[in-house]
Structures are given as structure tokens and as C-alpha cells.
Length: 124
Image 1 (cartoon, rainbow, N blue to C red):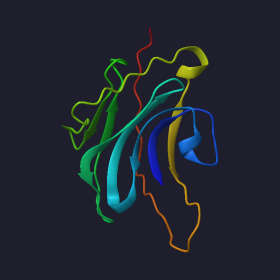
Image 2 (image 1 turned 30 degrees about the vertical axis):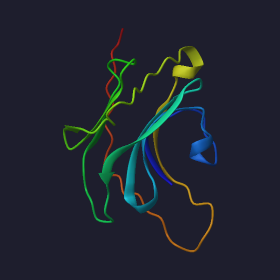
Image 3 (image 1 turned 45 degrees about the vertical axis):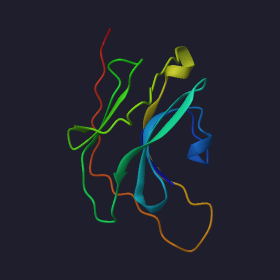
């Protein structure tokens, strides 16, 4: 599994983390949008399929935590009909940048190349 964007407390298996707002690459390059605020865990297929050599700019807009939006190369790819609210507060709102590949077995090599990450937040 490949995941990238924001996550809470570290777990060996990223899918066991209680807090996250990220993209997850599933089997055959299926790109999922996901949010988990330790109460509601939401995941949906964006309809985007990634190739092994794809390069793109991914963005997650959490300006409105009631309706988180997911973007690839400036296009909104938030799954239609799926709401991604994040109601966590206090410790459940604390996250950090996270980029990772998790492999539970097998002999294949998994890679995730990240050029850079930018994060913005309001000061108030």
C-alpha cells in the first residue's frame, strides 16, 4: 500500500492509523481519497488510475473540514457523492506529513518517489 499526505500517530500498517487525510494507491494503480478522524473512516475511489511512471501534483484542501476536497494536477477528483468530513479536535486533530509504502509480504519492490511537500495553515 502506498499512502501520502497527512497522518496521526505512527503504526506499522498505515491502514491502522486512527487519524489521516490522504491519498491511497490500491491494487492496479487505483487512487483512493481517504479521511479518518478516529470516529468516521471514509474511503472512496477517485476514478483515477496511476501508471508506474506517472508524475503529478496532488493537493488536499482542508479549508472546510466539513467537505475536504482532493485534487490531481489542479482538477478536483473528489469522489462524487462521497462526503469527507473531519470532526477531530484536540489530539484527534494533530497530524503530520506522511509518505509511505507498506508491504505485508512478497518479493516485489514497492516505490514511492516524492519530490517535495508544501503545507499551509491558518494561524488563527
